[in-house]
Image (cartoon, rainbow, N blue to C red; front, side):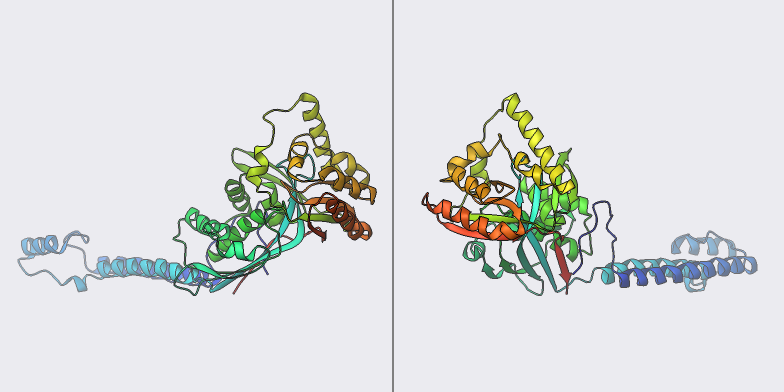
Length: 408
């Protein structure tokens, strides 16, 4: 599978075959025009013109009648005129060949995108971390209509009957941004990311749609454009950037442009999760947030978010407990989840490095050494049952690979 371009890379347009055809046609035209020039000079030296060469047929007829008193010579005998016309036709052929050959469209594109956790405590809308839960989508273009061919895995029924399918909408949006009419496509979806649980299902869907358009139109989008479009569609950058690039991403937005830096997480850190059967939409979770924050809490959040980045950059687990403190969103969102404080406290007692609400919830996630991760997730599930909260424990590795796609 091919990986997305780097953030600074610019897309290279046109397929290899299209470029070869265009290159050789242009070379042929250049040689031909050189011969035209020589032929024209030879013609004029032996046959001095009696009138302008570029006159219309009627003007040439009038000129020849007036000056020679005879019928004009046939335009087919006017060698420079014929050669110039032929050169123009060859130029049009070059343009036509390049458009036809370079945009030979694929029949199928397969995309694989990891899910993500976000915020990591205090890094609200700034920190994203990819996890090894994958959304896999096959885009089939040999179809006469647009529809969902099949869905499997998490939320399969909901995905199949969605009136405003996010993957499809994103693909069509990207096509329109590239000034192309969206082609008909049939989607085959296999999803392992729980929906509306704070594990980046919407961010992964957006990345899948963008990457499909990127691949369909011959690597038409730079990675910066992919990040910017994803942020515009989702309203925040951290989940999509983590799904696109893998690893931990640190994000900011300035004048609608996403600034993003990536770190690789330590190989021996894992995510111990409890995923409740409780759905929380991001929009609902944002409604409970306060309109303002005290200076002390603002300072505390800044310190925590900075320390989280330092913990990953230095791979220092001792910093994680301090780094996960939050005063901006978790104290207000926890009222949506029964037993939230007890579940996180149980994770810390079981030797987690830190524990926090994953994204907007309802998943609660602890970062732990890999050998303790399974025990910690089971401990969190037991604490949740004490509060009547059903769900499932889950242990996840952090994903270090970028989203991938394959053109068939």
